[in-house]
Image (tube, rainbow, N blue to C red; front, side, top):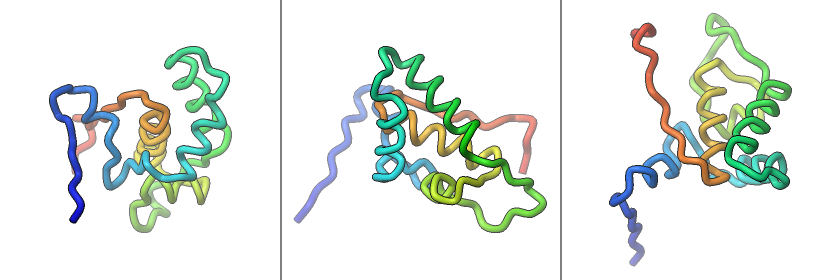
Length: 111
């Protein structure tokens, strides 16, 4: 029998846990994020270097040509995503290096 235990006593821990779209526990994402940030001396540097890597390596897909929604690991592997999918990849990479990350919905974008 196996049990999963989550310590929800801290608000920060909730923003480190992987989710369906933010696969911060994916081995490819963890490896790439660690490779990018291994010489970083602060969380600011880690976040900036990951952001710069994403800007240089991931292409933005127009919503009009989009199929199904990709998870962050698929965006990483395909090097392509919508702005929302790329944001999920960024959050996943930040979480994978221990930076608590929360995404807030844009109120101007209604479904």
